Length: 162
Length: 280
Image 1 (cartoon, rainbow over the protein chains, first blue to last red):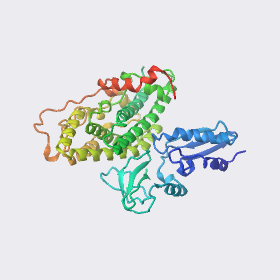
Image 2 (image 1 turned 45 degrees about the horizontal axis):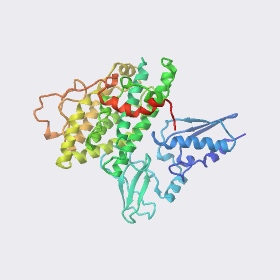
Image 3 (image 1 turned 90 degrees about the vertical axis):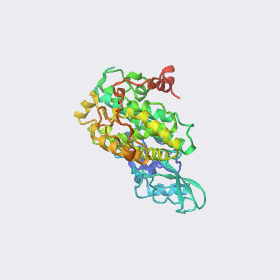
Image 4 (image 1 turned 135 degrees about the horizontal axis):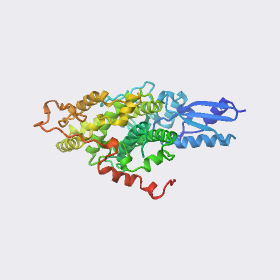
């Protein structure tokens, strides 16, 4: 009989296709695991409404459970409570940084309609300088903004607060 | 196809998001610079993402009602003709130049920002959840488009003229955002829909504030059919003359569209019309 912990460790092996260093557990999008007899239900939530990775993530979860001998898992997607970058694990933030993506700052500060505001300085994930500037708040995926380090000159992605 | 008020209302929200998302996607690969091409494509993605959730909800309502053959989010997006679409007229207007696209986004995002904020209180829990989730993304859209309106309005003589023309061209479509049609009224009474009159003042203030900073002034004729006629924004630069009120165009929410929607649908729906239910 499979336990909830077994399922969690299987999910640790399912990665986000767009940020492959993060598992779905690191990302904080797994909301609940319900087991009743042979019936396994996994509840997930999207990071962004239009995130195209969600379909791939759903397939990834199914494949992983199938690999471990559990076909027919039920996947439910919920919107509420809403995912925020606070759901991302500390381990996940660490992995992002090592991968070259600046992790979201611990304090939510961008979801504000005020104009021409800059967030608190985002440290460069390569040289750790705080002398960085935003090139665009819309980056290569819905969840990232594009930055540049003015010290080492490298452009980098910032996983923006949400 | 006679749908219940709850389905019509959900389609109004879904269609408005889908059509603007599609319009924005027409810029993908053509943006003035790479970063802004990506920004607008991201906004398109957000809007189409919202639309998907709303269409899934609408499809569920259709299927539960049994009033029409079973359908899906794709069936609703690709299988209806223009008179079945309930989007507001503003979103179907053609892209024009970059300034016009920005102005359309700004006028709509300002509305959507306050509208979704209210919709979070909806008795329809799914709509409330979609509004809460999407509201955070709309905040980015509003900020980005506001900054561009200011940058271009208060930019060069050329960019200022283009923004003035964009505003004059699009303003007549803002009245509809605050008009209440019959299915909407039913849903307002049921505690599901937002009464748009409750957000009109905040929209007017926000739009006036940004236009003012952009050195632009809204044409005479307040937002909303039979509007209060107050000029907005502009400060000292109130519209010259001021005698002629802008006639507000309405009809999109009840399926009476401008000529542009048919062309948009012909392109967007082509594949599903030619090869029904095809997948790749």
